[in-house]
Length: 275
Image: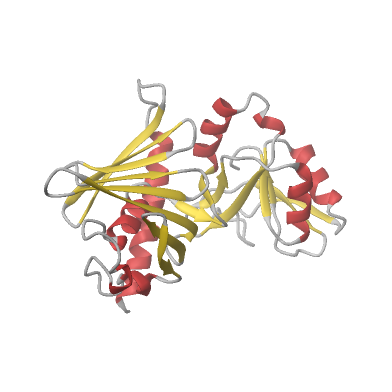
């Protein structure tokens, strides 16, 4: 098995552990912070927190690096230099998971790196700063930044939106929106993590259009879930969940009830609590 495949498995495992761990961690006494996790990357300890506005902050305990990830997949990287000043890099992430990455890196407001795969940042050899990032300050290693996001924060970005396990996301959105139970949120299914969702809602019209295109969403109420799928005009299947196999044996993972379109075009509208 090559290095990338091995690393992918490790990333999936660690991200899964992060989300499981997050679900059991008590809310911090600091009201703006929802959870805190720590992990080591290249011998440096990183601590991550997610606040109730849906922002993820990852920082190195030694003060060398700080990352700020917005709900929209935007990352501000602040690295400390030897003379005590700081370098700042901005990254727009379209996709980030254990198996794919797509991002644009900016330095001094200029796009200097386009990342379409992990090899673009030297992750295959994992030697730190990649040749593709030669225009970046030496204090910023793209491989370290993305690994820290994946491992320390358990961060996954899908279609430009930062997503979280549903149980984590709901804890955030219930504090952001008084009417969160009637809102619709982009969602997806990630291997081992189960259902993940964004903390920024979309309009019903956009959700219906997305369902027609095979995209998935989460809403709290069963009735709204069915109405959304039905409104797409492709028929309705469900509700159903996949928590048990054909022999009735419980599968490992977190599962939610959901509806499909009648033609099963890939769209899901999950709802409620885990089965």
